Amino acid sequence: MRKKIFIIAVVFGLISGGFIFATQITKVGIVDISRIYSIYFRESKEVIKLEELRSAYLKEIAKKKEEINLLKSQKLDAEDNNDDEKALQLDKDIFNKEQFLKEYIQIKTQQLRQMAQNLSQSSELIQEIADVIQYVAENNGFSLILKKTDQFLYWTPEIDITDKVIKELLRRSGKKNGNGTG
Image (cartoon, rainbow, N blue to C red; front, side, top):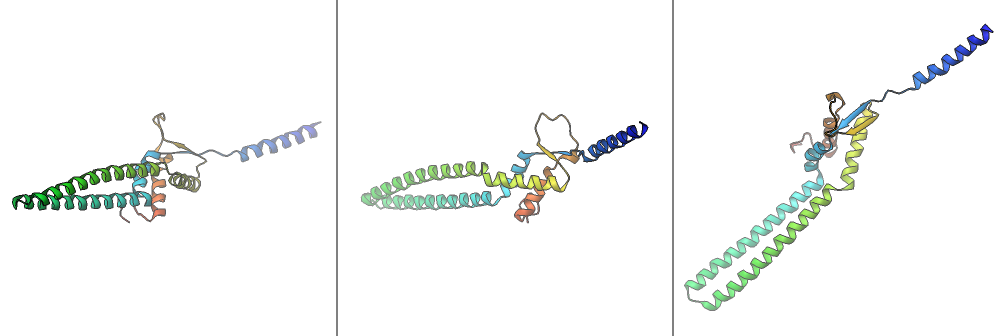
């Protein structure tokens, strides 16, 4: 009888000991997505391309304004020389170019806004961030990462992986830090 109790106790001990060793301690981390967007998003290739496009539009607008100013100057010269026919033609040209410029600015502004909105909702950017969060979490032994919210009352800085995620994103994009220098 004692032998049976001893065997049952040993088996029970082995089974329960196996459960103890099989239990994994969950390491939880947090990440501040809005901070990642504010730092990394402006450094992404797509945002840089958008800024280059915006710059090109602004140069084109400046060029068209310069053309209009030149026509205005020519109109003044024509008026000073009492060339009413030329002044009238230049006035029509100025009006047409100003209308075109106004429409051009509206269209390009709308295009840039749409591109920026599409970019902020880009599944590629979201997937890239998610992949890096997973990479950082796995390399630092985290089993669960939560998105930082105002509902968290307290956490230690050690569980916040935001800086590590930003650093890895910038490393992958070829940047060294968040100020745009590489």
